[in-house]
Length: 401
Image (cartoon, rainbow, N blue to C red; front, side, top):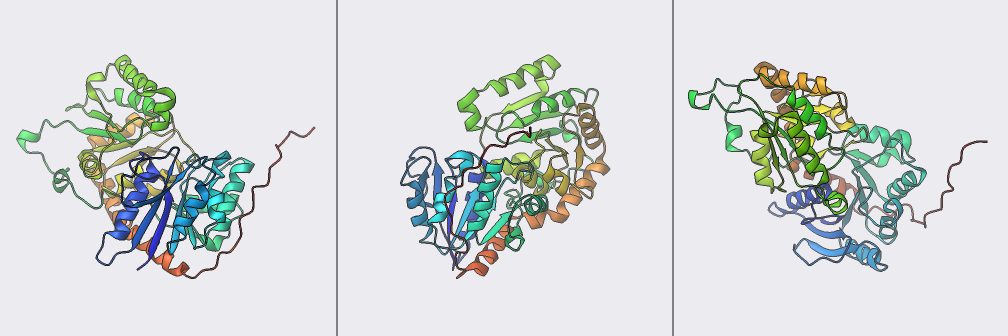
């Protein structure tokens, strides 16, 4: 039995890393004779204890925080340290290096973002994390390729373990029905559902999706567009509900308010599972050209839903071989055409569903947890390789004269 220490955000924090960590902890510890896990929760201010999994907190900006976090991780066999720019204190989250400098057990660094064009300081932070780690995990081959080509990271340390999927664990009653069978007379008028979900904020591209949806006039029955998810907490603190309010106003301008539903809840896994399985099409209109990991995309594939996505890197990799349809960023006519093709083409939708089904089992949290368990076992007894030293200031880059 292995004991895992996690360093990450964690519920009730509402973000992708927190959801990821909670799901992996549940899977590692939930089986008979399962492993043990303790979480060092990353927070901006001291929070009340709400979970037995949380054994310590790393309070960003606290002078004693890194030592406290490292001491908790050192009581475990292996530490799983999640990295995302913006969750740790210091410039580009460099305070995580102070934790790693005092961590005495093998570290698995899980990189949720690998930028194609980082600043010099962002690159240095990521390279220092990789130096301190015994293993580095990314969640797509695109991220692994980007890490190998653009960063000084030992390629022998890099493993690709996909993001796990909650929807592979529980099937909605709706999903047990064949969505492509001829409908019964009473169900013939059911309106198809186009679904976008996740924490809401600028960059999600939903304004372009609304315009694309507005071009679907004439379909019978008319589809509904469900936009589910709370506003991202950091966006909410900074801008309030300005983005959501702007989307509502745009829907009114386009004359589609009656067909667009904003569901502002942060759903628990079971409700989210049912919601995803109810969708006829999952639409991911993201504006990012950097995103190498998308938990929403993984959930949609694992649920075997037809998917339409912009060409962000993880989508380009995962939606090959007919698994989904890709469109250019902000290309409203192409998005409309893709939506119409799936909503009016049962054969196309079924082929996409079958393609998703062929890879869904690889995305189950049980499979993902087994990969982490095997990686951790291979590291037990591994000596700490590279000591962490203070960040070397990087001079600003100036243009040549």
